[in-house]
Amino acid sequence: MNVVVLVKQVPDTATRIKVSSGGVEIDPRGVNYVMNPYDEFAVEEALRVKELHGGQVTVLTVGGEKADEALRTALAMGADEAVRVSADAKDPLTTARAIASVVRELGPDLVIAGKQAVDDDQGQVGSLVAALLDWPQVTVVTELELSPEGGVAEREVEGGVEVVEFSLPAVLTAQKGLNEPRYASLPGIMKAKRKEIRQVAVDAAVTGEPVLRTTALHVPEERSAGIILRDMDAAALAKELVRLLHEEAKLI
Amino acid sequence: MDFALAPEDRMVAETVRDFAQTEIAPGAAERDRDGIFDLEIFRKMGELGLLGLPIAERYGGAGGTYLQYAIAVEEVSRVCASTGLSFAAHVSLGVGSLNLLGSEQQKERYLVPAARGEFLAAFGLTEPGAGSDAGGTRTVARAVEGGFVLSGAKSFITNAVSAGVTVVTAVTDPGKGTRGITAFLVPRGTEGFHPSAAYDKMGMRASETAEIELRDVFVPDDAMIGGRGEGLHGFLEVLDAGRISIGAIGVGIAQASLDASLRYAGEREQFGSKIGSFQAIQFKLADMAMEVEMARTLVQKAAWLKDQHQPFGQVSAMAKLFASEAAMRAASQAIQIHGGSGYIREYPVERYLRDAKLLEIGEGTSEIQRLVIARGLGLR
Ligand SMILES: Cc1cc2nc3c(=O)[nH]c(=O)nc-3n(C[C@H](O)[C@H](O)[C@H](O)COP(=O)(O)OP(=O)(O)OC[C@H]3O[C@@H](n4cnc5c(N)ncnc54)[C@H](O)[C@@H]3O)c2cc1C
Ligand SMILES: Cc1cc2nc3c(=O)[nH]c(=O)nc-3n(C[C@H](O)[C@H](O)[C@H](O)COP(=O)(O)OP(=O)(O)OC[C@H]3O[C@@H](n4cnc5c(N)ncnc54)[C@H](O)[C@@H]3O)c2cc1C
Image (cartoon, rainbow over all chains, first blue to last red; front, side, top):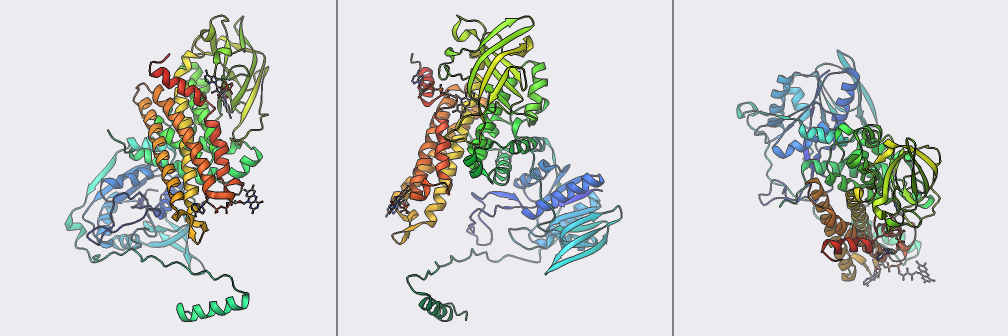
């Protein structure tokens, strides 16, 4: 069972983000980049599939040289091969077209992506790739069982679990809870350093025109400090709280 | 000149930080309180590849660099310096001796499993009468048919009860001073070799520290490591490298002190403001941050020199000395910033101070480091 995992390099959620002077991108200086956390579940699941059913795990990303680090993290976790796609990907659709063209060539039995990337939170790429390939897709997967022909996946739905059956090849997107991603082992990190990352260029005729354009990016406004009520008895406190919620916060 | 860490160095840092947060940090306070050395943590460290990080793959290691190892020791020590100490003693001293001085056969037998994390290694130099002055070594190794018989005692030996193998120094040639000291590999369970972890320590309480009683311990000829009479001089590079790791523990403790203090200063209010808004507190934090940066730079430089096969003894002594004293200052200031809360065990900063104190003593006291540095300046 050959699996392709789609990974994206995103800013570490702990780093403070600044918008660059153009106003539509984040300023990459001083930002610590990591593998998108949902993609870690995807990589882990692919490795488990390989351990159970054999085959190969190929990780794929669209991006510049810097994104090799995310691929190397996946290699260090145990992925067999890595492909970095360079393409003029400007929005989820152009990205998905680039990916779909390479996946078609790789011909895997399964594609696993994270359910969304935590940087732009679009959550589109996995689904778009499935649509472009005309493959079944199962999103927000929390449990997976495969047989040579197909699989059964559990999905997280509001207040419960949905169980779906699908045929292969298919595209899945991983939700937190699917598994516990393993650590990249240290010998794995050293070996990953020596592995070759295959570069594939996808040209503009394939990626086509973007359908979305970012026009502005804002950081959230700083929240004003809270109010602490003190030095009052319970009755006065309750009264003051009701007044504030009514008059200031306009919540009641 | 390039101060940037390579991508794989950062990956090592992130992986170990993650691992330390989830596998080592929980329970650090309890292990310290109860003096528990948790071998399960070391089993997991072995699985990750930490216990042979700077050792070549063909000897069971991860094939990493000393710089990466220094980073790993820092990250482990940031959450639990005791674990950092046992990790450092295993890799730098035990595994380091085998790697640098072991015969092929000794490497097969001990280095490979130790680097894989199948067992810990220990290094026994210190004795009741021989601390700073190894010339005071009284443990003797009497040559007999086919080997040696060791008798004497060792004190303060990290990991010695749990270790699968301990490097033990003993006098083979009395009258030759430090040139009469030879090192031997003593596997766990050897008859007459009795380690016991009986110390009730001030800090590093979750690191195993043992006294060893050697009562007519027979070891065969091939247990000798590093050559006859080389038990001290032959191991100088091992000890120099060990200092890098003690420095790295200091960086970890100093960083942890800074982290805790920044957090606290951003929460605690007095006089109607966060104490972090008082310049007196800000200056303390600024000094701590500066010293963390200096200590880390020095430690990483020493490790880098070693990786480049350049002389590193002088810089590693400086790194060890500066980082351990920086850790003491940082931990002490962390307590100060925490006020009364810093003095009680609910907060981790008092542990940082108790742990940091060991760094000024172990693997050569601060006085001895200053002597080493002065010698390096040509002073006699
Ligand atoms: C937790 C812990 C773990 C340890 N782990 C190990 C281990 O794994 N293996 C091992 O072999 N040892 C280990 N040690 C021992 C450690 O290395 C020694 O404690 C250290 O070398 C100091 O020796 P000492 O305790 O005998 O002090 P002493 O040498 O008696 O020193 C006492 C004081 O005198 C000073 N002094 C001594 N000589 C001079 C001088 N010439 N000039 C100026 N000042 C001097 C010292 O700096 C110190 O301040 C460990 C110790 C501890 C506490
Ligand atoms: C063992 C022990 C025994 C004690 N016994 C008693 C006792 O018997 N009776 C009693 O009443 N109390 C007692 N205390 C409490 C002790 O007096 C307080 O801990 C001390 O006054 C500091 O207050 P705090 O802990 O709230 O720290 P904080 O006041 O919160 O101070 C935290 C840090 O902020 C700094 N800081 C605060 N304000 C400023 C400022 N304006 N400018 C610059 N820096 C500032 C402090 O110097 C400190 O470094 C005891 C404490 C301990 C640990």
